Image (cartoon, rainbow, N blue to C red):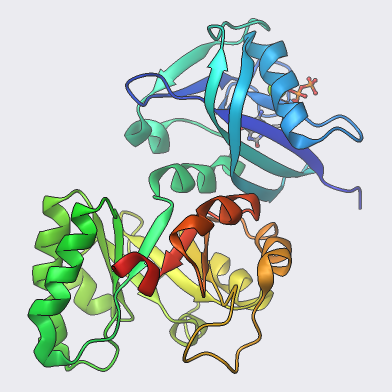
Length: 314
Ligand SMILES: Nc1nc2c([nH]c(=O)n2[C@H]2C[C@H](O)[C@@H](COP(=O)(O)OP(=O)(O)OP(=O)(O)O)O2)c(=O)[nH]1
Ligand SMILES: [Mg+2]
């Protein structure tokens, strides 16, 4: 089988946060579909250089600053590609269609309705997810108020994705906590996922669920509708593959570094983390021993960002 084609593409946003899409010209692979501008890396060309060249050729702009967003391996009947998408945060010049292609600035929330190539699905998820994912620390059931105060504080500090995780709480108490956490998160425009309990998450109208690997392992298909978020905890290549199979929107992969309570687990390190993530066609958060300042390292290793308990709680 031929090696996969490395394709780089850029996400450009206007002042209102809309994203630039280009229409693939007639006669090309996937003609007529809307894509993030970009194209194939030349032999031996670094991805960041290919990105700059493609955006100069196709749009007439000069990239000043960019960082990796997500790389999606995808198998088309015609060829395998690695769709390597970058967030372009600064450029000079004004994007013009240098190759006769139609251009459009599209609201982030409307991207899912646009006809894009199938490889772009996970990119839309990556754009909708933040770069920090808070997992709540363990509390005693009688410390519900303290837990909620912490969630409030986290939301006020700008956290926009929260996993409520209290695996040992009685269900009624957990339901109380989830209801109140849901309202607190909503008020701040943050999303709340419940660890482990699909049914309770649906009954309470939460934004989604996060499944431990052992629960995900027992599923053959996605356990909740497409309009909710499904995250899965993964620790190796097989678990990532299974998460993709059951239609997860994103995963955590851990432990990147050793953490208290998980001393027995072999830490991956960034290098192994990156090797695993590049095969996963979904956003993956780095988890395990993360500090706030690890976000950049996580991006460079192909992650969506970091997931953490301790570092994002206080
Ligand atoms: N640029 C881009 N390509 C995408 C996206 N999604 C997706 O599946 N692709 C696929 C379509 C093509 O098979 C491949 C990109 O090839 P291309 O034809 O645009 O490459 P290129 O710009 O270098 O054009 P050419 O010189 O080969 O004509 O990646 C996307 O969002 N942006
Ligand atoms: Mg192109």
